[in-house]
Length: 204
Image (tube, rainbow, N blue to C red; front, side):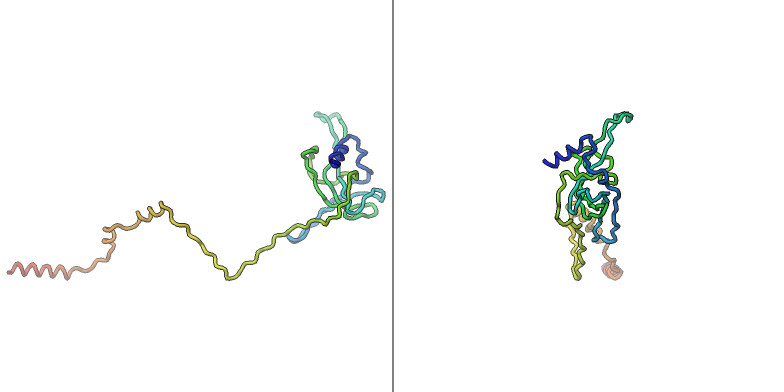
């Protein structure tokens, strides 16, 4: 509820709610990861002097100033400050504070933005800030499962369907085809015996 009231106050047209004018994101830097298990970082550099009130582990809100104009674009209606997300301060220097993204705010109850994400030029709001001492969550990397030697993979063949059985049955050779397929035996000897028996009967 307190956070919602803070956002409602930030939507007012007065730009003075953003705190000191020097508390602005002036640079954004990312590291290039060389391995899958290496953590990617995105640092936001904030121009802030010693009187800014920023300190380590302080979670602040990044807001973006939007100029509102009428549909023609000729007449300026006013300015609003729209909350973008929250940053967590990780280091404080003389005139610079370094922060990392804590969370991005949903657009369900906030005005939409042309560019999503915290960026250079966004202002820092300290009202409603709080201290977060929790450790940053590290990205989990999926471990490769080593292959187990000596493991045999069995391939299961599904039973033949009724249609496949009918096809196999229709492809099976019939009795005449089996007879034709058998090797031909030389029957010359049998024919000769039959001829001899016929001649003998004739002579008699």
